[in-house]
Length: 179
Image 1: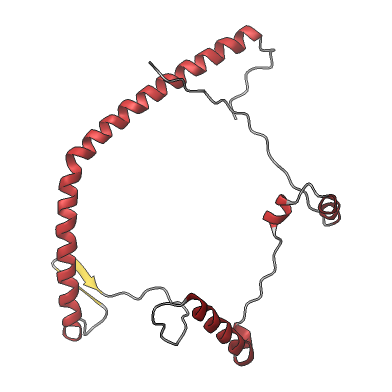
Image 2: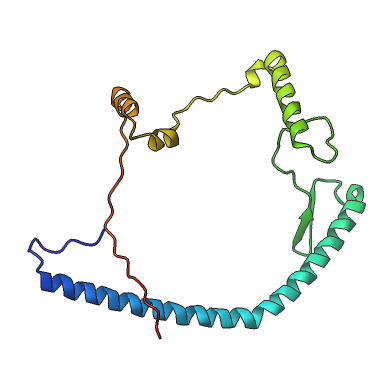
């Protein structure tokens, strides 16, 4: 929110002067931003081909290093999952654990995957019930969507809830095309 001015009444003339100043400064800021963007684009055009060439070489080098490390994994990584040589650390790291279906899926049939997950859930409910999650939460999006319905209005009050919508002051300058 803009800094409040001393407790004096703002005149129509002061309002109009401030509005004209705001629009003028907004136009100057847009012009300056356009100049900056053009300069950045020129730098991008100058250096991007070199960056892309270097990145391509790095990707090719990465592939060679990775393949070598995979082929020589047992000999190179006896003491752990990574090694450090010449100030460069290379190796393997574990990804984030995830749960997957055991049955291999050929051709990725979405319906079959869903069936397998449902079957797995049924078995986990019986054999590992402590690992089944039940989530109950308020559907805030649905309440907001139905907030005008009388039943929802009454229910919100009875539940000690309300839907609020903050008000924010704004100024939007309408851009006119220059000829």
